[in-house]
Length: 158
Image 1: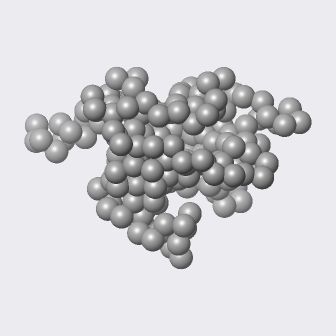
Image 2: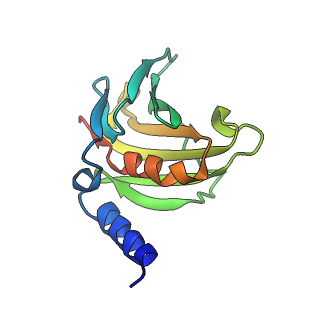
C-alpha cells in the first residue's frame, strides 16, 4: 500500500470514528462560550464579535481565520433545495461541509473557504432549533483538511 493510500485510509478512519482521539497531540480544546468546544492547532484564540439575533464570534489560528453564527437563523449553506457538499455527522448531528476556491469573496475569504452547517438538538428562541454555521478562510489549499478535521471535532454543550 502506498503512503498516500495509507494516509487517506487513516484520515477516513479518524473521521468515521471518535475524531477527538485522532486530532494531533499538540492541538488544544478551544471554547465558544457555552455553545460548543472544538479541537484546534496550538495558538488558536477565541475572537468575540457582536451578533444581532444569535451568538456570532470566531477563532484565529495558524493559517486560518474562522467565524461562526450559532442560533435559529444561521446560514444552511444550501441554495434553495440544493445542498451540495459533504453530508456528514458531527457530534451526533446532521451536518454539511463545503470547501473550495472562493468566488467573489465568499464568506469574506480571498482564496479558499471551508464552511459547515450543523443542525443541533438545542432549542433557541421561540422553540425553534439552533444550528451552527462556521466558516474558515485559508490561503493555502493544503489547510482545507486541517479545518475539516477541526469541524469534525466540534462538541456541543447541550
